[in-house]
Image (tube, rainbow, N blue to C red; front, side):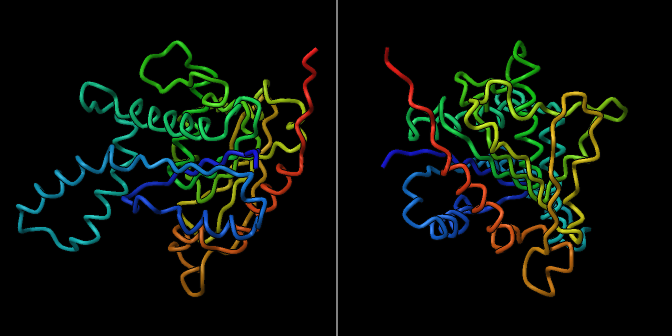
Amino acid sequence: MSKKLGVFIIHGMGDPDPNYADGLIRQLSKRLGTADQEVEFEVCYWAPILQDQQNVTWRRLLQSNTMQAKSFRKWIVSALGDPASYLSGYFKANKPVYGEIHECVRISLERLATRLRDADTKPLMILAHSLGSVIISNYIWDQHYNKKEKNVGYGKTPFERTETLTSFITFGSNIPLFLPPAPPIKCIPFPHEKLPEYLKPEARWQNVFDPDDVLGYPLQHIWDDPQGTTIEDVTINAGIWPASETPFSHTAYIRDDDFLDIVEERMKAILAVTAPVVSSQ
């Protein structure tokens, strides 16, 4: 069966298992039934780019016998160290980490495009958690505004440049923590002006967050945006009680039925749209 939709998944901060999205993919495939044969998934796993050095830092810190709460401190080094390293200008192997992470995004999109075939005419869905929403929004920004900059992971094809992005679902997003310190604050343009006309009616940016998630924020009112980008904030109660009533809800989205319902609805709506037949004459 021909593939009709590419789904790109990117994780947030910390050191997730390389197979962190397997359960999410299984649940979505189960919900789609036979239509799952029309969908191609790709998972972007960027954590090792930063984690290797964080492991070195932690081993050096352990040489001190003065630290308390070592397990919590280790998590802080691994998780909260990610945004600091990503945006610090830190170089690794003579390359800025920012660009290396964005190149990881680009390569993942390239792999997805290869399996989709004719990807430049097919819709892209992005599911971005936490710091992953910051990374992918920065990546999209660079495709529009930093085309002449080196080492930013600039896409080689329309698909890699997210020009066919139709469904953008951010969840547990902390984008507001990384905005410029003063207005105007300019949003990424969405949908892309080159999005095929047949897909534009289905273009949605949905920002899902749990009000108890202190690392997840609403987005629709934070931009000084003259371009008319529309974001729909969607609140859910992520996870199982009692954790769902705490900040631990930040880790529960991809296993939550309400979140899966949102993604399923968007996938089915996009799959129901048929691309126009292009005449060879």
